[in-house]
Image 1 (tube, rainbow, N blue to C red):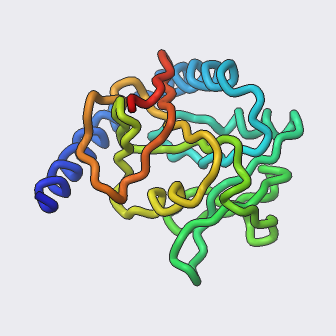
Image 2 (spheres, rainbow, N blue to C red):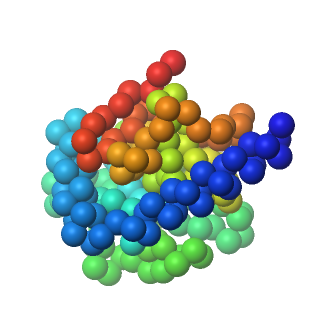
Length: 192
């Protein structure tokens, strides 16, 4: 059973990756704007937010980070802690100067940024390959984000294209769940 879920997860990742590769920059730009508008309308009161740095194939939430900083919110990004082989979070003050490239080629806070406890967040925005209606998340297969989410506080919101929101995805006990999933066209609260 365990290996069946791993196989199903790998197949689903490959399928989603193939669909992501076909999204044009123009479609990504339009759908990113729609997603940010939906997020901003639903979560205006969050004061301490854990963002993620979107990869080129993910919806672009970066302008929302910059706007939240300008409005006085505490904004953080995950960073890889090589000593602990896990992720933590650091606060950003100025994205133009506080960013470096991390372990997986993803933007991360610079070493000079102040670390923040994972229990201090009101809101956590979560990337994923796919989500389902029960709040399950399919990550990229390393388990780093599951371990990060297990330690965070606040409302967790998956961020995905519409086609990445599925009825059900294979999930295991260690897979983290999210409270909501935001897509360009809708917001779904996790079924309990």
